[in-house]
Each structure stands twice: as C-alpha cells, then as structure tokens.
Image (tube, rainbow, N blue to C red):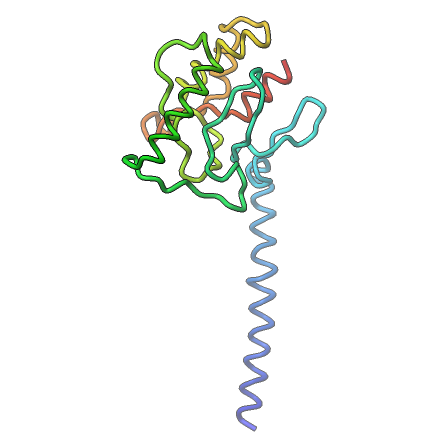
Length: 189
C-alpha cells in the first residue's frame, strides 16, 4: 500500500505543478507582457494603411518589383519553417558564383546606383529571415525606387532614416534599415 500512497502523491504533485507551471505561470507572464509591451508581445506586427497585418517587423520578406526596396538574399526564401543560411564558405566557388550573379542582377536593375554594390546585397543573412539591410544598401537602391515612384531621392532618404534601427547604445552592432517598415511607409505615402 505504500507504493499506492506514493503514486497518488506523485500524481497530485504532477497535477498541481502542471496547473501552476503549465497554466498559471504562462498566463501571468503573457498578461504582464501584454501590459508592459503590447507590440513586441504580439510579434511586432506591422499593418497597412487600411489596418491589414502586413507581416512582422522582426521577419524579412521578399518584395518584388522595382518600386520597392529589396531585402537581403535569403537561402530559405524567407520561410520561417526552413530558416537557415546557405553554409557556403566565403572561399567556395558556388558562393563566388552566387555573389557574381547577384551583383550582375543588381547592377542591371539599378543602373543609376552610385558606387560598389554593398556587401549585404550580395550575401544571404545567416537566418535567411533578416528584415534589415544596411543604410548604404538602402541608399544605393534609392535612385531606382525614386525613378519608379516619381519622387525625389531626398524624400526617400527621410523615409530610410525613419526606418533605421540604430545600433544598441550607439556602438553595439550596426545600424540597420527595416525593409518591411520602409516599404510600408512607401505604400502609405
């Protein structure tokens, strides 16, 4: 009978801990997150002018067409299900070929761009989901977008600045332009 009492005590403890740690604790944390930071707690969703959810500011997505700013290449086609990089060595022939192909395509699509193609335009992000590009890459694309939309480059520079997330504390990491937010600002314009 001792084993039965122990089994019932274990079962009661399982039920209590499941309710406490599996239900109550997550509910309290979710409620606290909703109160403290509702945007990030809900996935940092961004919406269109008419209120439709367009995606998350935390995840990159493909934008097609010359009237949009383009994100970094993605080895996973921006799919969260297959997140990951290409794992190609910088010295591999396949990587060199992919970089050369990307550079040729970008130069053909951006004939008015000045200077070299920024590095982040030529290499895929490690996760394949990065929503940010460098300010240099955004400004490099600006002449194409300005021409397609018929707006001055200076106006695009202001939108780029508004969509730029600054490096933490000014020196940890690098500034990055959130392409999803930038393109939504273009769509709202």
